[in-house]
Image 1 (cartoon, rainbow, N blue to C red):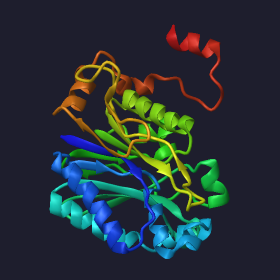
Image 2: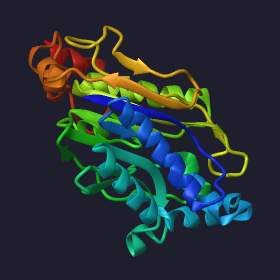
Image 3: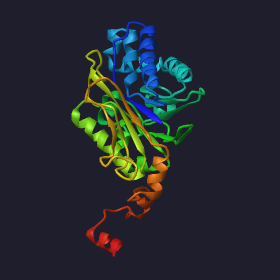
Image 4: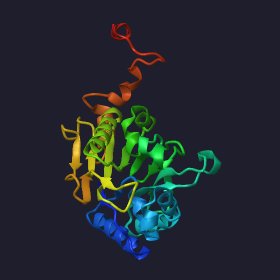
Length: 300
């Protein structure tokens, strides 16, 4: 199976048709290279705010609402392209005002996975960054879910979520974890990438990371973006010794592709030199800090 993960530059759009043409071109390019699973980044949908003009795009609160109002139409576009090309697409995440009283009237950060069959499953971000909490006011949404697809079991950890081991462990049955990201600084990119690689090691699975790239001076929310596409696995049997299946050039727009060997995840979980996923439960647990005495007792 071939996977494509995006380093995606957001644009100032002068019409809906310009957005359609852009997304259609990106999907056609990846599908033309044989990709079956396409991953767009976190908050890549913020470019939709430019359709309401520079004043809206430049105002944080108004831009969140403007994007949310166009998500259903964007999903219809992605669904049509998924069916047309016979691919699965994880659309760029977007702020969505969908929770009503449950979310206090605030938006969630939502990614959507669309299948060629027309099926769609969404995944909301679980843990917000400092900026999402204030001034954005984005909140956590629906819980993590494991998505059964023709390509295998897929989980989605949106950006910061990939930095938390227990969120990754909740999706330990996944064959592939998708990590759409949006990071301002090089340090942010590396935090998410290190988290993605750690989740691949712990769960002995494939983790794909997509990034927004380039400057967006028209937006208060996503004005600066640093990143690259990447696909990672456990550095073990059937995978590269570095754990890096593919990595794009930093801040260079375009797709990064990786061929996933058939049965590689099942094999490494069954026959790998180490068995991190199976041995997870052997870690000490408790509601207090672990001491050296605890560790000696655990290993004796």
